[in-house]
Amino acid sequence: MPESKRPFHRASDNLTTYRLKWAAWEWLYSEANCRAIGFEVRLEGPGGRVVDVVGVGPDNRVYAVEVKASRGDKSRDDNDSTDLKRLTAETPVMEEAVHLSAGILEAAARYATSSGVEELETDPAYRQALADHDRRTKKRDNHAKRVSSFSTKFRDPGFLRTAHCHYLMTPSGLMRRDELPPFWGLLDDTPQVLVEAPVKQVSDATTHVLLISPDPTHLP
Image 1: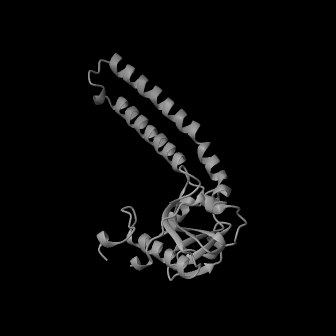
Image 2: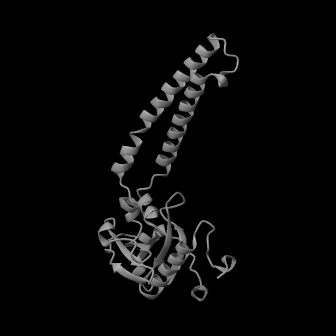
Image 3: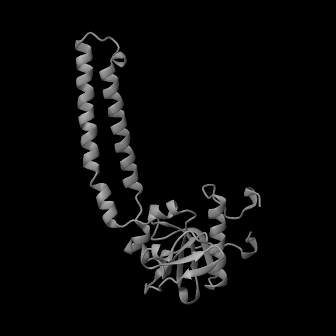
Protein backbone atom coordinates (compact mmCIF):
# COMPACT_ATOMS: atom_id res chain seq x y z
CA MET A 1 0.00 0.00 0.00
CA PRO A 2 1.43 3.43 -0.91
CA GLU A 3 2.54 5.40 2.14
CA SER A 4 0.10 8.20 1.36
CA LYS A 5 -2.82 5.75 1.62
CA ARG A 6 -1.83 4.07 4.90
CA PRO A 7 -4.36 5.09 7.54
CA PHE A 8 -2.95 6.49 10.79
CA HIS A 9 0.62 6.25 9.48
CA ARG A 10 3.19 8.46 11.23
CA ALA A 11 6.22 9.70 9.33
CA SER A 12 8.52 8.43 12.10
CA ASP A 13 7.20 4.84 11.82
CA ASN A 14 8.95 2.38 9.55
CA LEU A 15 6.87 -0.22 7.75
CA THR A 16 7.54 -2.92 10.37
CA THR A 17 6.37 -0.68 13.21
CA TYR A 18 3.30 0.35 11.22
CA ARG A 19 2.32 -3.27 10.56
CA LEU A 20 2.89 -4.21 14.19
CA LYS A 21 0.56 -1.45 15.31
CA TRP A 22 -2.19 -2.80 13.10
CA ALA A 23 -1.49 -6.34 14.34
CA ALA A 24 -1.97 -4.99 17.87
CA TRP A 25 -5.19 -3.30 16.75
CA GLU A 26 -6.41 -6.57 15.26
CA TRP A 27 -5.68 -8.50 18.47
CA LEU A 28 -7.36 -5.89 20.65
CA TYR A 29 -10.44 -5.89 18.45
CA SER A 30 -10.75 -9.63 17.71
CA GLU A 31 -9.38 -11.28 20.84
CA ALA A 32 -9.69 -8.73 23.65
CA ASN A 33 -13.07 -7.52 22.32
CA CYS A 34 -12.08 -3.87 22.56
CA ARG A 35 -14.41 -1.49 20.75
CA ALA A 36 -12.53 1.71 21.56
CA ILE A 37 -8.99 1.56 20.19
CA GLY A 38 -6.53 4.36 19.53
CA PHE A 39 -3.01 4.84 18.22
CA GLU A 40 -0.46 7.10 19.93
CA VAL A 41 -2.58 7.65 23.01
CA ARG A 42 -1.27 10.01 25.67
CA LEU A 43 -1.84 8.68 29.17
CA GLU A 44 -1.48 10.27 32.61
CA GLY A 45 -2.70 13.70 31.48
CA PRO A 46 -1.24 16.29 29.07
CA GLY A 47 2.36 15.71 30.19
CA GLY A 48 2.11 11.91 30.31
CA ARG A 49 3.65 9.17 28.25
CA VAL A 50 2.41 8.22 24.81
CA VAL A 51 1.45 4.57 24.26
CA ASP A 52 1.51 3.05 20.78
CA VAL A 53 -1.89 1.34 20.93
CA VAL A 54 -4.53 1.48 23.67
CA GLY A 55 -7.84 -0.36 23.81
CA VAL A 56 -10.78 -0.34 26.19
CA GLY A 57 -12.60 -3.65 26.41
CA PRO A 58 -15.46 -5.23 28.33
CA ASP A 59 -15.91 -4.02 31.91
CA ASN A 60 -13.79 -0.97 30.97
CA ARG A 61 -10.62 -3.02 31.05
CA VAL A 62 -7.75 -0.94 29.62
CA TYR A 63 -5.05 -2.56 27.47
CA ALA A 64 -1.78 -0.75 26.70
CA VAL A 65 0.34 -2.18 23.88
CA GLU A 66 3.89 -1.00 23.20
CA VAL A 67 5.24 -1.89 19.75
CA LYS A 68 8.93 -2.76 19.47
CA ALA A 69 10.32 -3.58 16.04
CA SER A 70 13.88 -4.30 17.23
CA ARG A 71 15.78 -5.33 20.34
CA GLY A 72 17.47 -1.94 20.50
CA ASP A 73 14.09 -0.23 20.45
CA LYS A 74 12.94 -2.38 23.34
CA SER A 75 16.09 -1.84 25.42
CA ARG A 76 15.70 1.96 25.34
CA ASP A 77 12.57 1.72 27.53
CA ASP A 78 13.63 -1.28 29.63
CA ASN A 79 15.44 0.56 32.43
CA ASP A 80 14.66 1.11 36.10
CA SER A 81 15.20 3.89 38.62
CA THR A 82 18.58 2.41 39.65
CA ASP A 83 19.83 2.72 36.06
CA LEU A 84 18.71 6.35 35.99
CA LYS A 85 20.46 7.14 39.29
CA ARG A 86 23.66 5.56 38.04
CA LEU A 87 23.52 7.57 34.82
CA THR A 88 22.72 10.81 36.65
CA ALA A 89 25.63 10.24 39.03
CA GLU A 90 28.01 10.58 36.07
CA THR A 91 26.93 14.19 35.43
CA PRO A 92 29.34 15.88 37.91
CA VAL A 93 32.24 13.89 36.44
CA MET A 94 31.36 15.13 32.95
CA GLU A 95 31.13 18.72 34.17
CA GLU A 96 34.48 18.50 35.95
CA ALA A 97 36.14 17.12 32.81
CA VAL A 98 34.83 20.06 30.78
CA HIS A 99 36.01 22.50 33.47
CA LEU A 100 39.51 21.00 33.51
CA SER A 101 39.82 20.95 29.72
CA ALA A 102 38.69 24.59 29.59
CA GLY A 103 41.48 25.48 32.04
CA ILE A 104 44.05 23.62 29.94
CA LEU A 105 42.79 25.38 26.82
CA GLU A 106 43.12 28.76 28.49
CA ALA A 107 46.64 27.95 29.65
CA ALA A 108 47.62 26.76 26.16
CA ALA A 109 46.30 30.02 24.68
CA ARG A 110 48.31 32.13 27.17
CA TYR A 111 51.48 30.15 26.52
CA ALA A 112 51.11 30.40 22.74
CA THR A 113 50.50 34.14 22.96
CA SER A 114 53.49 34.70 25.25
CA SER A 115 55.61 32.71 22.79
CA GLY A 116 54.78 35.11 19.99
CA VAL A 117 52.23 32.93 18.16
CA GLU A 118 50.00 35.27 16.16
CA GLU A 119 47.38 32.71 15.08
CA LEU A 120 46.44 30.39 17.95
CA GLU A 121 45.11 27.76 15.52
CA THR A 122 48.63 27.30 14.16
CA ASP A 123 50.01 26.25 17.53
CA PRO A 124 49.98 22.42 17.96
CA ALA A 125 49.50 22.51 21.74
CA TYR A 126 46.59 24.92 21.45
CA ARG A 127 44.95 22.86 18.70
CA GLN A 128 45.26 19.71 20.82
CA ALA A 129 43.77 21.45 23.87
CA LEU A 130 40.93 22.85 21.77
CA ALA A 131 40.14 19.44 20.28
CA ASP A 132 40.16 17.86 23.75
CA HIS A 133 37.85 20.56 25.14
CA ASP A 134 35.43 20.20 22.21
CA ARG A 135 35.38 16.41 22.64
CA ARG A 136 34.66 16.59 26.36
CA THR A 137 32.01 19.27 25.86
CA LYS A 138 30.27 17.15 23.24
CA LYS A 139 30.42 14.10 25.51
CA ARG A 140 28.88 16.10 28.37
CA ASP A 141 26.11 17.47 26.14
CA ASN A 142 25.31 14.02 24.75
CA HIS A 143 25.17 12.66 28.29
CA ALA A 144 22.77 15.42 29.32
CA LYS A 145 20.51 14.59 26.39
CA ARG A 146 20.59 10.91 27.34
CA VAL A 147 19.61 11.72 30.94
CA SER A 148 16.76 13.99 29.82
CA SER A 149 15.33 11.32 27.49
CA PHE A 150 16.14 8.27 29.64
CA SER A 151 13.11 6.02 29.79
CA THR A 152 12.03 3.77 32.65
CA LYS A 153 8.61 3.23 31.05
CA PHE A 154 8.52 -0.56 31.26
CA ARG A 155 9.39 -0.68 34.96
CA ASP A 156 7.77 2.52 36.23
CA PRO A 157 5.09 1.69 38.84
CA GLY A 158 3.22 4.89 37.92
CA PHE A 159 3.00 3.89 34.28
CA LEU A 160 1.95 0.35 35.18
CA ARG A 161 -1.03 1.82 37.04
CA THR A 162 -2.41 3.42 33.85
CA ALA A 163 -3.84 0.17 32.43
CA HIS A 164 -5.10 -3.19 33.62
CA CYS A 165 -2.97 -5.09 31.08
CA HIS A 166 0.34 -4.10 29.49
CA TYR A 167 1.69 -5.91 26.43
CA LEU A 168 4.74 -5.75 24.23
CA MET A 169 4.07 -6.40 20.54
CA THR A 170 7.16 -7.60 18.62
CA PRO A 171 7.95 -9.52 15.43
CA SER A 172 7.84 -13.30 15.89
CA GLY A 173 11.02 -14.62 17.48
CA LEU A 174 12.42 -11.24 18.49
CA MET A 175 12.05 -11.68 22.24
CA ARG A 176 12.32 -14.57 24.65
CA ARG A 177 9.74 -14.92 27.36
CA ASP A 178 12.33 -14.54 30.11
CA GLU A 179 13.27 -11.09 28.72
CA LEU A 180 9.91 -9.57 29.53
CA PRO A 181 9.79 -6.84 32.18
CA PRO A 182 7.66 -7.68 35.23
CA PHE A 183 3.87 -7.31 34.77
CA TRP A 184 4.08 -7.30 30.96
CA GLY A 185 2.66 -9.78 28.48
CA LEU A 186 3.95 -10.57 24.99
CA LEU A 187 2.17 -10.52 21.62
CA ASP A 188 3.62 -11.39 18.25
CA ASP A 189 2.67 -10.23 14.78
CA THR A 190 0.49 -13.21 13.89
CA PRO A 191 -1.16 -11.80 16.14
CA GLN A 192 -1.39 -14.07 19.16
CA VAL A 193 -0.56 -14.08 22.85
CA LEU A 194 2.80 -15.64 23.68
CA VAL A 195 2.71 -14.60 27.34
CA GLU A 196 -0.51 -13.55 29.03
CA ALA A 197 -0.26 -10.23 30.81
CA PRO A 198 -1.36 -10.27 34.46
CA VAL A 199 -4.54 -8.30 35.07
CA LYS A 200 -3.65 -5.60 37.56
CA GLN A 201 -6.21 -4.23 39.99
CA VAL A 202 -6.27 -0.62 38.82
CA SER A 203 -9.05 1.69 39.90
CA ASP A 204 -10.49 4.11 37.33
CA ALA A 205 -7.84 3.33 34.68
CA THR A 206 -10.08 4.79 31.99
CA THR A 207 -9.60 8.26 33.48
CA HIS A 208 -6.11 8.16 31.96
CA VAL A 209 -7.39 7.45 28.44
CA LEU A 210 -8.81 9.65 25.72
CA LEU A 211 -9.40 7.58 22.58
CA ILE A 212 -10.32 8.10 18.97
CA SER A 213 -11.35 4.76 17.54
CA PRO A 214 -10.13 3.96 14.01
CA ASP A 215 -12.57 2.56 11.48
CA PRO A 216 -12.13 -1.25 11.25
CA THR A 217 -12.83 -1.04 7.53
CA HIS A 218 -9.48 0.79 7.17
CA LEU A 219 -7.43 -2.23 8.11
CA PRO A 220 -4.62 -2.61 5.52
